[in-house]
Structures are given as C-alpha cells and as structure tokens.
Length: 315
Image (cartoon, rainbow, N blue to C red):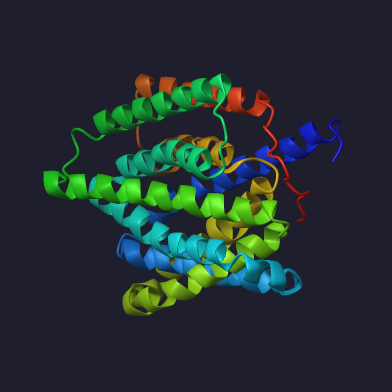
C-alpha cells in the first residue's frame, strides 16, 4: 500500500466507524417505543440475529478464509464470547443505571480499555495527540452525563444505589467486551482475514451463543406490532448494518482509534432524545457534545501508526 493512498484508506475507515456509531446512537430512542421488552431480549435479538445475518452474508468469504480462521481460532472464540456478553451487559446496564449512565460508562471506558489491550498485546505506543483526543472525549461524555442527570433530577423515576452501582459495573464489563471483540477482529484482519470474514465468523458464533437467551426472554418481542418493529429495526439497522460498517472501519484503523471515534454515539443519542423523545439538554450537555466533536478532530487528523508486518486488508 503506497504512502499516498494510506490517508484516503484511513479516511474511509474513519467514516465507516462514525457512520456505525451514529446508527448505534439511535438504539436508546428506538427502545423507548418498546418499554415492555426486557433488556436481555433486546440485546439477544439485536446482536444474536444480527450476528447470524452477518455470518450468512459473509459465508463465501468465511469459507474462502477458512484455513486462516482455523489457524487463529482462539481470536475467533474470544471475540465471539465477548460479542455474546456485550449486549446482555450493555442493555442491562442501561436498564439498571439509566440510559445515559450505562451508555457513558460503556462507551467512555472502551477506548481506554482498548488502548490497554493494544499496549499489552501489540506493544503499541500511545501518542500525545491520541491522549489529548481521548481526554477531550472522556471529559465531554462526563459533562454530557452530568447534564442529562440534571435534566432528569425532577423525574419520578428513582434508581436505587445498589442497582445503580451494579449497572455501572455491568457498563464497565460491556466496555471491556466491546474493546475485546474490536481488538480480536482487528487482529484477525492483520493476519490476512478479510473484514467481512472476520466480523461474520466472530459475530455469527457470538450470535449462536445468544440464541438460548433469546428463546428464554424474547416472547415479548412478538406480543405487539410495535415491539416487533423495534426488534426488527435493532437487528437490521444498528446491529447488522452498523457492524458491517464497523468491520470495514476496523480494517483501516486501529481498534483503540475505532472505539474512541465511537464516543460520538452518546452525542447522537442525546440529540435524538431532545428532538424525538422531547427531553431537554442543559447548556453543560452541549458543551460536552462540543468537546466530543473536538476529540474526533484530534483522532481524524492523527496518522495511524503501522504495525510491522501488517498485511494489506481485504474487504
């Protein structure tokens, strides 16, 4: 790959990750239209069926890269386990601690955990520019969280301390699994596996692991047309299409960069909550959103550090 073509390729990767994050940011608003569906059912349906669809779409690529996937089966298995845990932890975290807290803890912790994983296993050095961008993003998410908490201070909904703490713990678990499956997928791509095969195999196996949970908890998804519509939207748009875009992005940028770019997700979620749900966002929240946009500027302008021996990526 020529040095002149690299910025264009990386720009495409950044665009794909941002587009995926925008789609993910719609899930909280979509879930408000199905309040009777449990978080486990939503998570299992979205990632489970969405993962199986990814596997079916990438069947030819998975078959073609079968020997490579078999050689690096440990990355596939670890990534699949992380995929299976992530939605259960994430949606339950939002249910227990609140949508804002659950989202901020999950998405805010993922970049730091992803950077730690890359530092330990890949020996990747963190640049000063990445650190500044990550700090801006994390500060922005904290301000956004505080602002939305203030906006809900007069709400009649009260969350117990124990439920809130457990929700935060689950949010950290979700952030860790998000960082982990992002890293394993990126690692498979560095080994020469196409992005569609890496994501299809990882999410397909993870989807199979989620099917028992869906069978036990998913009855409410078919109790009404609105619940079914929300379920189908979650499966096809944020999860299926979103993770196809995320896989394309991971083939061009590092996992730590991708997870940090996804900090745009809570901004999208907050804006949609204001426009569609009718929530109010204080000035502090808009300041937080602006800081997250500043974080994205730092990351987009930063050149990727190429790992020695990295192979050209295939879609």
